[in-house]
Length: 137
Image (cartoon, rainbow, N blue to C red; front, side, top):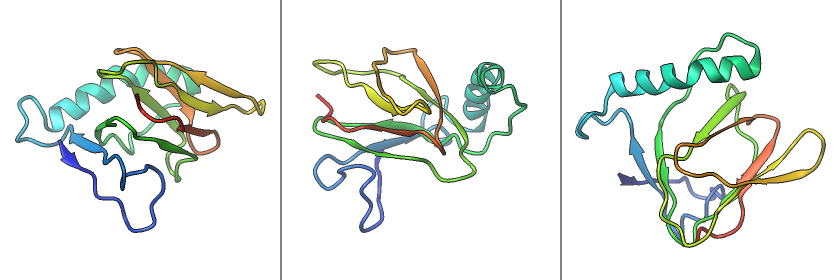
């Protein structure tokens, strides 16, 4: 993966203290990566997401695997349009303790969701505040 380059003033992550790494699923230099892998991931998740939303969806963003390192946070935020329905897939993890994502649902309550490798969390990313505000263990 490559260290992500965040623009000056960006506070989505505390990249100045704990840089994040992005592994692009489109990077053909990686064995098995490329458009075919991106398409496989979308195909595998599409039915579940469409069932959840009740809508036929168009893929607009499937960019890769973000690797958070010890001490990282993901500030609470909402995503930009056209990202409406989103999924987070826990591909793998090596943490000393759970590192939940906190989601503020439409009922106004905060929910901490702890994921294990293979889990997928679906959420309305344009209208639901979400983040990982506690440091990655």
